[in-house]
Structure formats: structure tokens, C-alpha cells
Amino acid sequence: MRTAIHTSFATPGVIGKEGYKFSYDQSGDTVNTASRMESTGAPGEMNISRATHDLVQEFFEITPRGAIAAKNKGELEMFIVEGIKPKWRAPDEDTQPGFEFRKMLKDLVQSTAPQDSSIHILQDSGTPR
Image (cartoon, rainbow, N blue to C red):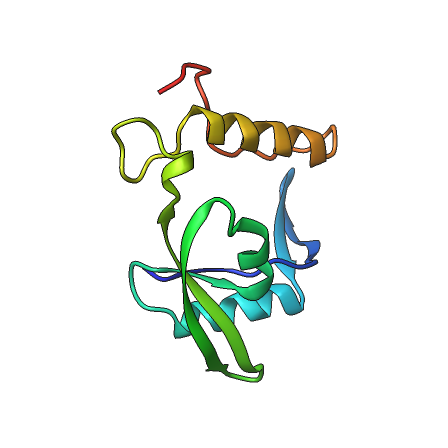
């Protein structure tokens, strides 16, 4: 599986309705850029853009890939996320985020998400690891 994240604005929209359920989608340049990045990534790697790198570099160990040619996008500066930085890891864990990281992320989501939002990231039992 290849994964890519690009950070910018996206346009949400309803693409269909079946009965009482709506189908939603994201579109726009942000989605297209992430798609192009995903297609140039390697299996098992998390490929991120410069914009995303600038937002998460404090928390993750990141390796530059350089400028990569992306279809209809030209060259895009890309990075690979290697893992969470030791400062933010759970005790005695190499890959798992610790309590402080989970708390910081939960506080960030609560402070930035609209009140009626259904954003859920890293369910936390509240127990430090």
C-alpha cells in the first residue's frame, strides 16, 4: 500500500444519494496533488509534500526524497515519514505515540474542528502509556 498526504484546501461535495444516505467526496488541486504523490511513492512508505512537512516536522523523523516528477504537476518536493520522533514516543516503544503526543493531538483537533464536526483521530482511553 502506498500513502501520500498533501496539505492545502479541498472542496467537499455530495456526489450521490441513495435513499436517505448521501455519498460525499473531496476534489480539487489538493486531492489531485496527493493522488500524484501517491502514485510516485513506494509501497509501505508515507509520502508527504513540503506543505505537510512544514506542519509535522517537529513530531516526525522525515527523509527528503527531492523533487519528483508528477504527472500534470511538474516536479514536486516530497518527503518520506520514517517514524515518530523519540520525544513523542510511548515509553519502551519504537513506533507508538505516547500520551503527551495523543493529548496534544486531541487538544489540537478539539480547538480547530467545527463544533458539529465528526473528526476522530487516535482514540485515546486517557491512560498514559
